[in-house]
Image 1 (cartoon, rainbow, N blue to C red):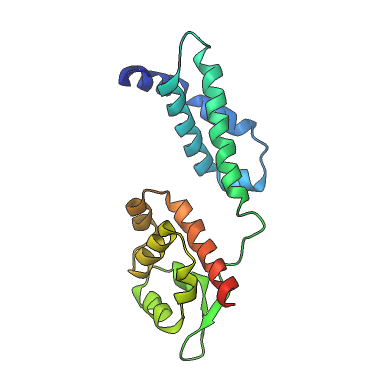
Image 2: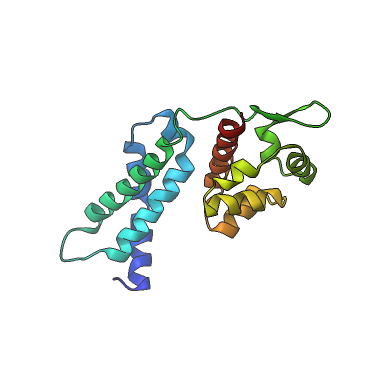
Length: 178
């Protein structure tokens, strides 16, 4: 394991590798849409490379390239779980007491009134019983009126992951109750 100063030097001297390897990726819609997240993942790969680099085995840029690309591909693999499963943010998930449609965007909206209407007007019990602990925590925080950034900070995940997770949870709710 390298000391802090060495890690910092390796990262700062090789940061352009992340952008270089990002540009070498096939520029699909998924890659273009998730550029910032991919760059962030590449930076994580670069830091991991700097922390675990062994001078006796290879040149740092060679080793870092494997770590950076591995981070990209692991992130893209996670994203592929969502490919083909995307739904519109305006998809209807229920009807309120006044006969108005409730949409996924109502769940994602940061206005507390909409969340309270959602709790009042939808039966979530069967849906909640089937969720993982982390998903329940995300749902609970959202229902408390927290925005995506606040939830991400509290559960130590990225805001973009929380956004995707909320959409996925909404979609799963539709399947169960739909």
